[in-house]
Length: 207
Image (cartoon, rainbow, N blue to C red; front, side, top):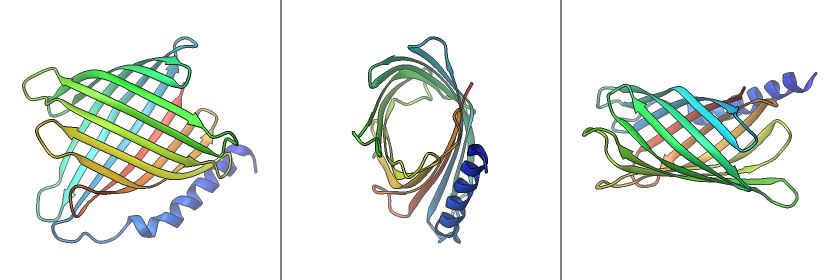
């Protein structure tokens, strides 16, 4: 079994193992949110990277309310400096809002390269009257179980100024399919809003 096929096999095995914990009937009044996020990455130079998310899909579901669906397109230009990346970040929703702002990433590995840490901060200013100022803090701890599978803990926090923050934490698994392609699946619970859960699927492709 070659590396790419073995990677896909290991990833599917992990997803199937986690599936019973991710799929269950909705309780009345409980929010189940879903994000699907494909991302294309291209190295313009050794230090400059361009990232494009053509369409992030959002589904906000609750049995007591109508399901809310919308999409978002995002464009990032990054400059790499040691363990940091500095971004100019623009995004727009299908519902009419648009934002621009900075993003700062930090990535590091332990000495034995078994545990990795990713953390980033984003701040967005609205480009029209409907677009509120907000910020994100994202953290990801991964254990490099193998070349293909990295279980971890994902933290995803969003704060729109003037409202309560949303802070999600939960288990994740990153699967390396090829040297240029990886996926992340996470199921998180909101720590600031009772009965709210978030499932996230991210696909990264380097071109």
